[in-house]
Image (tube, rainbow, N blue to C red; front, side, top):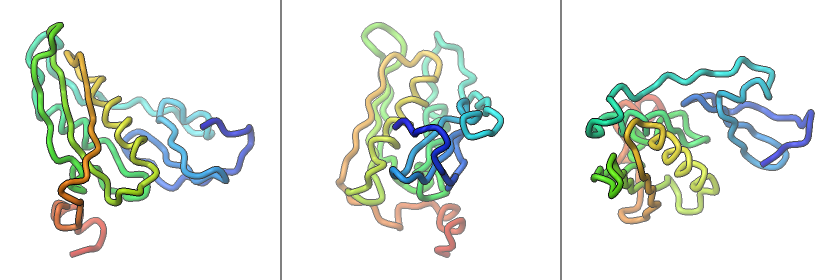
Length: 159
C-alpha cells in the first residue's frame, strides 16, 4: 500500500523490527529500515543467523527468526501464539536448505494473513544457506488459545 504524503497514521505496534500502522485505508506495515518515513530513526535489525552459509541450517535459527514475526493486532510473536504448526528443513536441489513451514492464524478471516506469512517467508529467506522457503497457511487443526505458551498467556492477561 502506498499512502499519500502527510496521511494521518497511528502506530499501533512496533515489534519485530516493523511498525504496524492504523490508517484511513486499513492496517499497514512499515519495515524498521524505512522508519524514517514515519519521522523515526531507521531500525537496523539484529541478525538472528550466526551459522556459516555453507553449513547445515540449524532449525533453532529458523524458529528464532519466526519469533521476530508478529500478528499486527497481538503483541506476542507468532511462535508463542502457537500459530506455527510445523517447520521442516531439507536439502535444496541446488544445495543449501529448503524450509517448509505450516502455520495458521488466530481466525480464518484474518485479512493480515498473507502479510504475516510474507513476513515469515522474508525473515527465513534472510538466514544463511537458505535456497527455498515455502509458507503454507493451514486451518487444521483450528487455532485456539490453548496453543499459546504460558508466557504468551501471561503477557495477554489470560492467566
